[in-house]
Image (cartoon, rainbow over all chains, first blue to last red; front, top):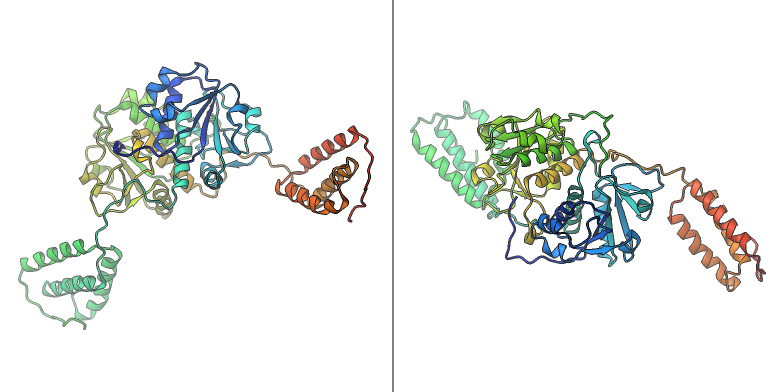
Length: 264
Length: 264
């Protein structure tokens, strides 16, 4: 999935903060930063990273997500890291026996999109590699976000969890906007062009004795017309098909026992 | 996000095949297998893997996703790998100048869910690390799937792309089913309990001279009632709140200039 367009500048849209609580490995900070950059996030906050900051291993693993790494903010406590946020989600893979809503990344992304779109700030907490967030940290969040993983194989690393949340954020935030690229679909064929195509095919099939009896022709032509219409051909494709039919039609000269006039 | 429940057995639901075309690094095959396992996929197919198969590096990187690794099928050609499939998507990060629909992972997942739910088979193609799929390979697919990445930072590795597609598959396939866990929300408080809570609070506020004039009391009580109702307290939380109010109420003995009877 290589495809970075170096002519494009990274766009700093309002977006959720990604808050890593006491991350242990620099590599995980870096790959999380990269996952954020993939989906347009840029506000990374670290709470008491084990190996301090800056961390050369994080920079190396971030693979040029410099615009994220350069903006990292470090805090001593989680309370300070979320001080400016008005919506906070805690990611966790297990129940905490707390009275708190549990939602999926899709609902979280939709809610954050509305919240941030209204001018407010949101963030998502990710816990330590070994044992996640503690219950006091989770209690600071408005809701718990969990991934719809297979229970028998539920272990995701931090960067993977960040990737899924970041993907969902961008899907929700850019909902209705075009994907990074689209293919040219050509100019759709008109009704007249489709009728012309099917008539040419019908004539050629008459000449090749395709219809075993004249009575079957109208029904079979309806099926063919239906099949071709469903394909949504463009004008160039109709020209290609007409060329194919003409080529096959000229290949054999066959007797034509029940030639039927157009429109019958 | 550690949280594998070793008491649970992996469930082999009908699900899309993940087809890696000429993968080069065993590690990427392994991490892709792990991403599949996270979201319940198990049908991995390799087309002409560079280093042959089995590949010890793939096994190591798969981190115990043995139920995926043990079922890997290897094919000489892509045509053989997709022979049994009736819906095929090609992932790519760039335009191919082909007349082909381009969709996001969410639409792909929804379509595959319907297709597989109807008893048919589907698969998703992922290209080589260096340069993805070639145009002939893409032309074998029904549509192109691309991720809504930030154009200025679009490079995802294979395992990350597999992770997002696998996540979307599971989100769509299990749509409406519960997440891996949920929190106990307690027994919702009844209307009577809410009225009792607010009345108790109103009485306490009367005693503490909270209302500057009796005329303001009804409107302010409406606001308080509305705020408390919106919070969706459960019965235990209402009991806790009543205890808090009683405790604060006893703390100070204040004169009560305009004590108002309930219901006024």
